[in-house]
Image (cartoon, rainbow, N blue to C red; front, side):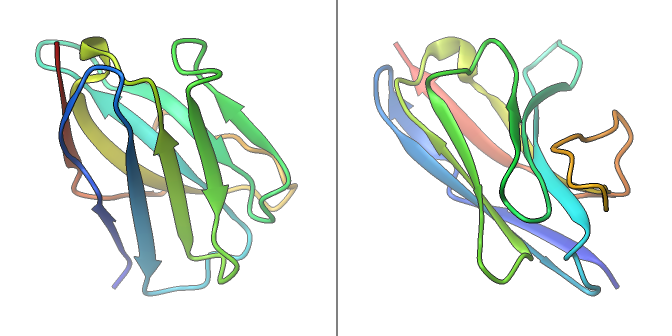
Length: 125
């Protein structure tokens, strides 16, 4: 059974930092892009960041460029999201996702192959 488990969420003041982790299990993820979506109360789920299977390509939503950094673990079944200069508008549930991308693109479809359960990030003003 495939599982994506997120950790690292929490409560932080504006301007602070958090590091999210995602560990995938149940299959080989060496040709899968991994990344993050988020959903704030009353809003649709939105793309945040993605990293290619080899860690060489990344992509970001405009709202987080320059503040967030995504990376891939050497074991290829982990992904990390370093979030700096957090804002109250970053408050959301953050979901890890994995999607087939053997070409090496840092792209996640809106309906990726696998989802995690989510971790809450709350940024206070």
